[in-house]
Length: 148
Image 1 (tube, one colour):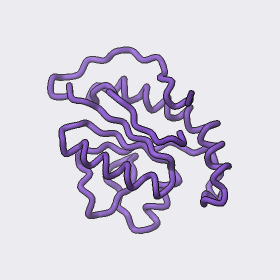
Image 2 (tube, one colour):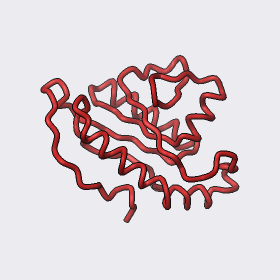
Image 3 (cartoon, helix red, strand yellow):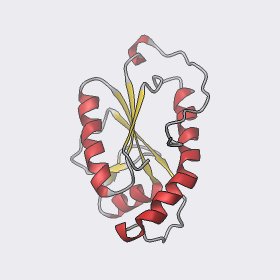
């Protein structure tokens, strides 16, 4: 069973009626072929009234920024300037690898192992932060792909 799917203990929070909408947390494996479909799903869910939190790694965000993406708000992930992501909150977690480590598909096993050993701790902290945030509805469901 995945460490990511074992929820940390969280206290219930009170949110306003406006915030009582489904909250989807999407966390793709940090490779382009996983991120793009998840971003499309995030946009679809957001357009249908879901509160969406999109989680990626700090390294992915940095790479996107270097390729000309724009930051949507403080401490958030980077998206193309044409993306409509106003209703999607972006969060990051570290992947546990050194900054200059090669994260290409040739080193997929190392990335997978590092995510398994390190990122879940930060993911759980993020879940606690979201669950205790007064202006964020409780996470209703989590969508990850098979590698997490």
